[in-house]
Length: 113
Figure 1 (cartoon, rainbow, N blue to C red):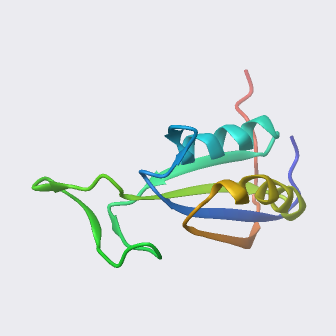
Figure 2 (tube, rainbow, N blue to C red):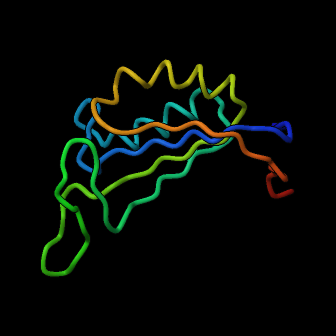
Figure 3 (tube, helix red, strand yellow):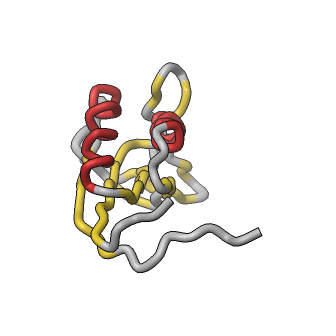
């Protein structure tokens, strides 16, 4: 797959406990991205954060393991493909934050076998 130099980054901020059909929402989002042929997706687990649903700081500490740490799903592709993807996943994100920003793609390549 070739990507143009000017691309887009879709960033989805959700909670670790968010679900889609009894499975983690972040997992469903990544599988949807793969099934739709997007360039790639990464899930990042936050160490600390808060959001629109709660002003309580969720944190990862030994003495208090949060069950709803922040999750960030990042997907890079073209703006048009990400906007179409967002239309599909939007109804399934009950709470969170979604951003879309332009990025300059330096390279996107697979290892040659």
